[in-house]
Image (cartoon, one colour):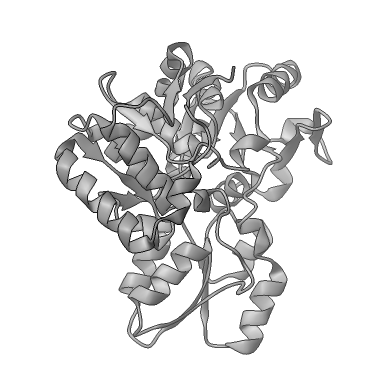
Length: 367
């Protein structure tokens, strides 16, 4: 049993749904949405495929969807088109009378999986021995409910790429040092932008339980968990150099989950919302290379024909786990809801949720 109870029966999509045509699935999803009305609510993350994205009642990045989940008090059924940690967050921020579903339980996040609670507790114990009570933990929302609970219990908070700077600034009003999980790149880029030198940042390696740092440990201000986003690590300095060679006048904008080297070599960086707003407000005829998830980049290209837009790495694929949410799984989930069948429900244990809500609330208070 994991820290998040997953009620799923059956666990595998019935093959029948694979035999349906796209038009039939779209029609049936539309009919169910109409019948359920405001009893059904479908949040959709920006990285979703268009076939699913079109049915979302609200779309956004992690912060936007967390805020929407917290504000929604009406829907009985919340079908989260995203990945597991997002559905967990929605469950923790909604009421007991609301049920959160994930259309495909395999839709996880490799970054979130890079920090489990056992590794984190071991790291915290060693860091406390080394630094005493001088550290506050922050976790990217791309983390499990258990990690969120860990930060809540230890005085810390969640962050998103939209509010990371604000939350890191807050953290340093609380303690002398910061322990940032699970994405080292977002932590490093955010701290650097706030004036903390790279030589004052260490990396915690959970595989061998060691602190990677050259120098006097008393100089350490930020301890970064050795985790990353597999999608954004696909953008490299070579990607940037290729765009500079092929399109010398093109501006490059990337997500801060990219490495420090890529962010430094680009023209701009920011959250998903920041990237969307920047392209939206850019003048007609401007040209852009975007370093983020491919489904989103393709949608931006489609929505802005008056601008020249390419992916920073044309060979990138979409987020594979996010792509597990598709039309067959969405239809299957909605039909099970209508038939009063229990399945694909995300429910976080209350003892975990209580501490995790502390972490989330500290973030939402400052969002």
